[in-house]
Amino acid sequence: MPMILDFYKRLIDDANDIVWAVDIEGRFIYLNNKVSEWGYNKDELIGKPLLSILNARQIENSPEKGIEIGMNGLNEVEVVDRDGNIRKTSLSTSPLKDDNGSIIGTIGIVRDMAEDKKLQERIADTERLASLGQLSLGIAHEIRNPLSSIKMNLQILNRLIPFVGDTKEHFDLALKEVFHLEGILEDLLSYAKPLKLKLKQMDINLLLDDTLLMVRSDIKDKEIVINRYYDNELPKTLLDEDKMKQAFLNIYLNSIQAMSKGGTLCIRTYRERELQSNSTDMDGIEKRVVVEVSDTGCGIDKEKLKFIFDPFFTTKPYGTGLGLSIVKNIFDYLNAVIEVNSQSGKGTDFIIKFPVTNI
Ligand SMILES: Nc1ncnc2c1ncn2[C@@H]1O[C@H](COP(=O)(O)OP(=O)(O)OP(=O)(O)O)[C@@H](O)[C@H]1O
Ligand SMILES: [Mg+2]
Image (cartoon, rainbow, N blue to C red; front, top):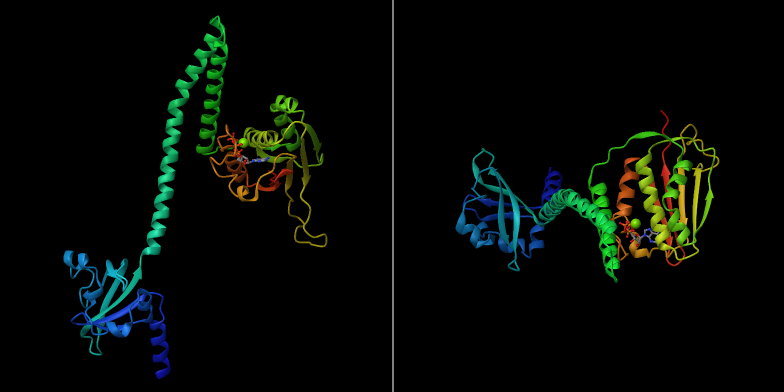
């Protein structure tokens, strides 16, 4: 019996919340060890009224709130620690009874809410960001129509105005910036809108080549060498053509932008190999189709690498920083995994692994 009592005593003495008991007059008759984290010595509190450690403002406003002697309750209570800091706590109380069932005091369990508060603040932050996202989506929609009207009118004027001196340069600059704004809006809308995929069985090699055509003038201007190593035995894969092109376009553009004249862009496709040659675990399981896009560009610093998929992270004067967030969104939807290896000054590899889904 004493052993069991000893066990219960330790259970409460060492609990991670403060546990106390007060008598019918509200004076401490027990406190566990946790109270020392608030700077109090539990022995010096024994016999003192519970009110002595509560915040004066709280006592003024509702002296008995949360600590109705002998009652069940759950309340927020402000406690003052030994250093005078006010701690917001949640206090759960229950009656302390003697052997006859008569109420002789109150048992209280006190939890510091600082941690809970941090969690609540994080949730509030996420909600605020989500509503900010909604707001920017609304604004992007509102700006899109007037902007295309500005673009259309500038294009008409471009044909009609007989430009003199350097007015044409000013005009072209205005038109270029309108295109730039349009690009930002498109990126923003495509990032914030929920994705709707139109899946069909696709030949990845063909898709990669089609996307290359979209950047052919940049490739030519920068005299970039393209090396393609395609596995022609790849199975067709269930993908969304437009989204895939959008994703690879962003990856190609980043590579091209990272390279100076004469760089090399290497595109490789292959079927994922088994992890171990003697493993039988993978037998019967479709192995993934892998696409690697490697460039000999400026590379990405180690400390920047973890941010590249974050929206609005950019190191470019004219970048929006949405390119790779869109890429990540698309690949996440397709259950594809994306890995990046990069060496500053040497180049970057993007490795994307697509599950093979047959229907
Ligand atoms: N192949 C690459 N080589 C070097 N740095 C890269 C490469 N791909 C991405 N990055 C880095 O990641 C950052 C984020 O890329 P992301 O495509 O999201 O935005 P961005 O290219 O800056 O702007 P945009 O919205 O116009 O695409 C880039 O600014 C760049 O610093
Ligand atoms: Mg980009």
